[in-house]
Image (cartoon, rainbow, N blue to C red; front, side, top):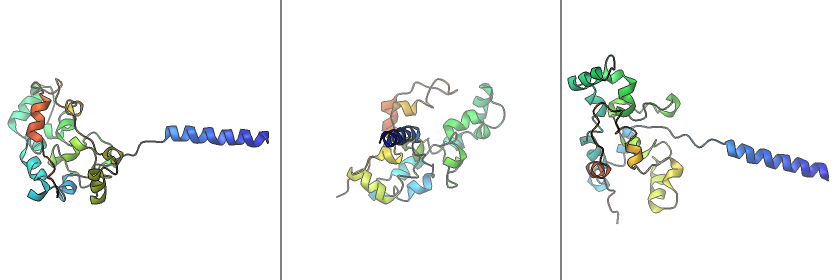
Length: 184
């Protein structure tokens, strides 16, 4: 009887310890094309079109300009800013993520896309999950969906940037805001 109790205790403790060491799910960046499928057009709030016209969508392309090359050189960055880790970590969605967390559909050319603000979309990109999140039957965070806040933005919009200007979160939100349309 005593041996069974000790055995059960050991099994229980191993289970508790293993659960404690279990890793959080790793979500994968899938690229703007996956977001565009459902977030394009007037009936969907023109979310893709709003992003496509803003500076985040052009973040990678901006690095190819002569102005960016001069800024990079002045900051001590050698070579092409479109190949410099110091630039790409803020100008390309998921740049610093491990290779196995990037789907082949994610491209540097899309610059700062949806997933930079909303988190890697592999688990929440499906229509069913999005409907469940919207209905409140599941939590978006459980599927990697992030609600952007100032702390997220200042990971790049900070004094380490060679083009830093005071970051005003409330003003930035107005520029990039894309409300979901009312369904009904």
